[in-house]
Length: 297
Image 1 (cartoon, one colour):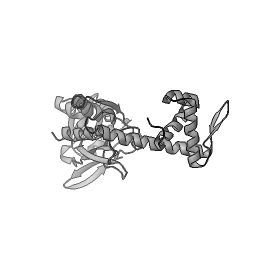
Image 2: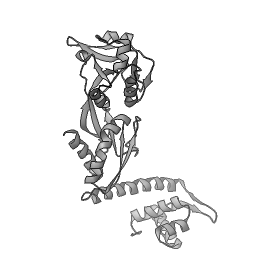
Image 3: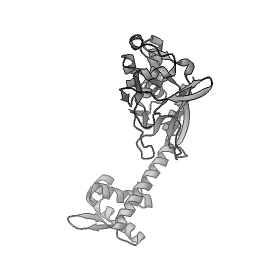
């Protein structure tokens, strides 16, 4: 690498900071310690200020050096991202960090991963499943699959599908406690609810074209839709949950849909969320395109 340009000087300075000494940085960069010292001195001369304070025992940064280090790290990271995005346009490659909710990820995203890496073998998929909201701008993920209406943000979102909600219970529970015929009957039942902040406190219904909500009660709350479905299968109570979570249960008869005539058919959009723009890596673009393609089939 040419260390005479400003980006080369920045790399040397950052490496000195990371390695803790001029000699260690020289070894890491394949230079001599005197060459590293000359590059630092040249940078200081151009800027007209001291960046490093060197003694035989310690290496410390001046306030200007700390500021230069922060800026150099940011500029080098941006440069690497741009070069990576351009370099992989022909053959998408690299590590793709994907975040998805536990239940939806296991049932919907995981089954697609094998087909995706078969199409793009140079991409390594790093998949994290959980119900926490990751910070994409902070670098915790490249793509996140999120439910519901999204707040305003600098992120780019592409709609990949939607899901509805359904009220369900197990045949065993209904045999013991009876089958509700009207939404108000739920007040006499144990209703299993979500406990995260985004969850609505009431369950919505519709009657004769008029929407209304009902505050239900129960002795179990949970952050996982998959866990609520399991609790409902085991006869713990009635729950209102995303259709995707219980499709197989309904087909097998392990769960029974309830109050369908009162279902408001409120659809919840599903988006792939990511950092867009011209510097977006090709691996992100092709993965989002793949999700849209698979969900439209």
